Image 1 (cartoon, rainbow, N blue to C red):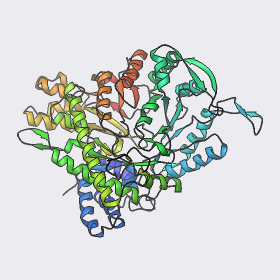
Image 2: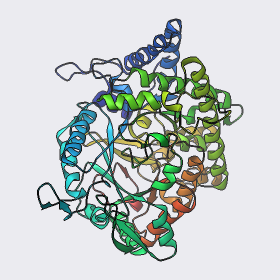
Image 3: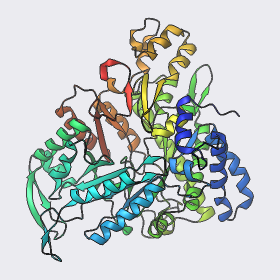
Image 4: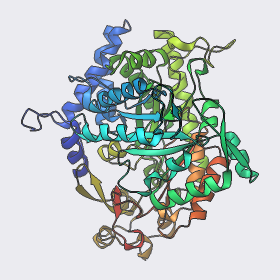
Length: 575
């Protein structure tokens, strides 16, 4: 089977994923990369007493990756079968209120970024600025000051020799320094290696709804340290997000309610894109199924549920093997990885799938289908995890977990599903990213050190040929940034399914996120795209809708508010 990769995919693979010699020359083909990863991950079968299964599973793993039906997270593609052998995507590190803890985490951050991973931190345990430091009699500098140390460390370390590291910084909404944290990115030069999220609590949301005040708490003493009006804080959050897309929100109490191992600790932070809540020292390895390929043709496209079920079962086994094959940066991380065995299987190519099924993204029909799709994936993933538990044993920390209940069947993994953004993975797979709608039908993608990749959505040609209105003039029109809705030869029902991100109402974006969240163990990466003319009030309403609809977090982005915007559309309307 010949690999069919787009020019953009080849560019990304050559710059980031494929082996290079000492002079920087690429010495590996994409096919050899998939073979390397498949062979390495299949070796785990012998560790579980199934050496005879290694070769057969290697072939299955190779097939599902090289057909671009499933891809694991980037560190697995980069490092499996190579010296680093660090295969996990994301980690959360503790930041306790002491210099020793802070700088231990700084060191571990450097090790993780060097190996291709991303890190999340809660700075909520650090005493506020101007608080007393009893050992010196001086004043504390506060969380934001120490965050700069982590940011500088990231700047100095290139991930796996190929990319800068990524961080998530979280601060609880009841920390005394919360307003400084919320507004820090008003200076675009600040925290360029961080995403920021406010950990919003249930008491804060209650105060917000009642237009009341809520208490700030000094984490050093546990005592009240003043009060703020919730609506005023929320207004500042919305204004800052309107200006720069940050901070996002994570609904920390809602996330904690879904904690499968509360006996081991509480959630305080997530990975850099917000979709993976993790305990301190906990890693997670992710993978995504290209659902745009989970279809069959019979006078039109329809879901191939049998193919999807087989892909899910194989992917869950693959990800469980990854846990065993990975070399983790520290002993604490190794213990948490193998103790909880968390995996995060998600999807990419969802917008492609909707076009093939002739559904409009954001419609009630598409939301219902999203729930049906993710429920199927979740059920099949848990079925496979239970099967693996009978073969290999349950995850070691299952005693005391939510799975430790009378009549409950043992499972191999504490979690099995996550919806990741799949930024570069979707370029490799030649599909739409994560569960996002199409950004545009024609755009320029900024990747890796300023490289620009022009792209035209290949589904335009595919669908126009299927429907009998294909012509070169149409493709040229789209490639120049023209709107498909301007073309008379395109039927109305086709114009409708080729909806793009800014044509979808914010609440419809959020409804889609909520539909996937309902059947996802961890959380869902989803950007709520807003046009340039969107107001602060619309940002506030989007945040409230995410809370009301049951999401675990939310990120908004108003077009044009960041110089380093990853996707640049060719149409002047939203550029």
